[in-house]
Each structure stands twice: as structure tokens, then as C-alpha cells.
Length: 239
Image (cartoon, rainbow, N blue to C red):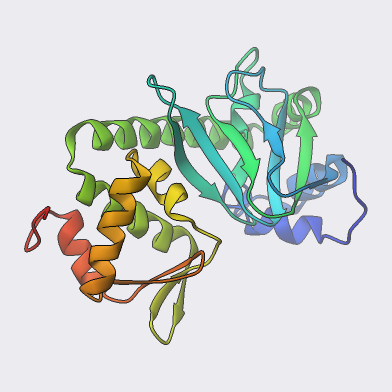
């Protein structure tokens, strides 16, 4: 759905790592070619295995990127925030999306269709090379997370999930590091590749130990060093 909200498109592009340091001509070219879309909360931008027909940069909101596992479980791979690039796989002809993208909150994105993106990348080859690097990095990230789910204990996986979120979305508050998005225990279970029961039990135990604080659908990491110790499998046991 199109929207005409005021978004400083050039400023947003400069803030996106994909465009960092690019010349003003390239920034202006991409900005002028973009469409502004508003996405309702819980709506999908695209679904896994659909043809990759658009690329976007998030301007406002949060977007959950997830993949269905072989067992049919929804596994959350990443949470995109403003200035993050989504769907860069559209730079590759005939590609399909490896992940589904769903708005967690009402969101706004700059969008380019595949034909426009192809023309822009032909005019700005440095950006085309960067796009391929990002695609490679994302696939390595995906492989690493699947390996983590296959080989690591559940407690380590949950700790790693919270630490990744802290790195992406963390904001310092009086009690520690607030993960700055609505985050249910089901979300944490899906991101860690475990069950709701196991995620709830683990987080309840960590609350008792003073490692995390849960307030409604918000999580604060109050003892980051202890969470790092769990992620590294040192000092804390599974039970």
C-alpha cells in the first residue's frame, strides 16, 4: 500500500550500510527511483519461496525475517530495523526469497521493483558488488544459525538469540540492556529453534537468577556477562 508520509529518503539511504560512503549521484538516483510503502502490523512484505520481485529499506517499524524448518516450525532468523536492507536477493535474476518478511509493528519502507533495481545496479556497479557481498553474508549467517540449532544445547541457543538481539536492537536502560521491540516468549522460542515450554522455563529460571527481567512483552538483559558465559557454555549448567 502506498503512503505519502514524510521520509527523508536520502538521509535514510546514507544511514543504510549498503549505501555507506557512496557518491551523492548514486544516492540521489536511488532516492528518486524509490516508492514509499506503508505496511500494516503483522502484514507480510513477501513470503519465503516467492519470486524475488522487490527490494526495500525499512524507514520505520520492525520486520521479522523467518524461515520454515523441515519440521514445519517457523524459525525467526533476524529482526530488521530502520535503515536495514530487506530482500536484496532481488538483485539476482530469477531468484526466490529465502525468508518471509513480516511487519511486527506498523512499518514504512522505501521500495524498488526488480526492473528498477536492475537498471540502478547497472548504473552503479560498486553498489552491485556490495549487494552480492550482502547476499553472501546473509547466507553464511543463515547457515551458522542452522548449525547452531543442530549442535548447541537449547540454553546456549536462547542466550545467543538474546545477545544477537541486544547487538541489533539493544538500548541501555537503568536495569540493563532493553531489547527494544515487543518480544513474546513464543518469539524467543522461534528465534532459538525450541519450544515455547522450554523457552519459558529457561527464561523463568534466568529471571530468578537475576540475568533477565521480563515486563509484559519486553525483555531486559540485567546481567549481560552471565548471558555471555551461558552462550560460551562456561560457568552455567543446563539445569
